[in-house]
Image (cartoon, rainbow, N blue to C red; front, side):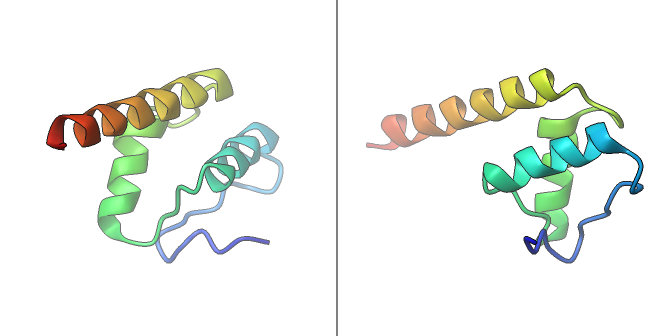
Length: 75
């Protein structure tokens, strides 16, 4: 079990696909620890209420590349 943060809203038990998405977020280190973190995940990673796993993976990868470019730019 992983602490997903105070702002984590778990899917229904029967929502297997949504639990797979939450597992993916946990594996990538994304947590709902603050209101800002929840807003970021909802608006930039999940985007829709019931996202496809492939889309979530793609958005996570895009965000990681964007952050890497920002770090390179700051150097």
